[in-house]
Length: 298
Image (cartoon, helix red, strand yellow):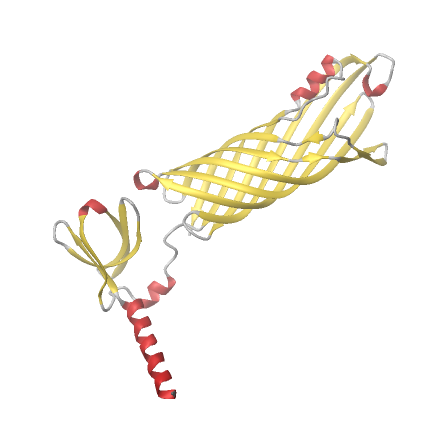
């Protein structure tokens, strides 16, 4: 029994060594034979490594230039075993994106405001959006990571004549708001490369994370700070164009969801918690369109 076990282990070792050391044969249509290690095959190209002038090199051939492929044809490999073990992935697993653009909050503004006040709050729906994301791809197309986005909007009006803040007396006040919305969440990403030399790429993402909302308001001589937090869902759809091996130009459309049902309101050093009903929930739903750069690294 012990002898059989030892023989079995020996056979496994031999097979394992052979699989590591074996190398492939590529025969081109010009009848050139290449002792190579095939690393990846795709619809249009075959990617492989080979040794030339004592150096390990990586390249590719169009499939229409290949006459024959034989995997494991050579029993030993020209490529050093140490190199094979340390070789990087055949795809770029690390992806980092940074973008900036326009954001629009799609939540409704109450019709109860005077027109000039409502126009002020309507202007706050538009703002600047910044995003960063980092993903590690487990395969060519599937990745996991983190995404962060920041939205900023500001508007100011002077000499507004209105009955603002439930005061029945007509007032003439200045009104200014600065709104900040930050999102940080886990992200699941999918990318699809296509075209000549895979220069084109579709990038899709789905995320769940924490959303923080702040509104700094000045109405006349009153200073009011409101803040709230909630969970949000983020959707991404983007197109990337490869500028070189590691840098891509990126255009992205994204959508963030989230509703604030409770606000902490601070004025004159006093903080109160305000419960929002269904009619005045603070909607953080937002559409963004942005452009930037994406970096892909081994």
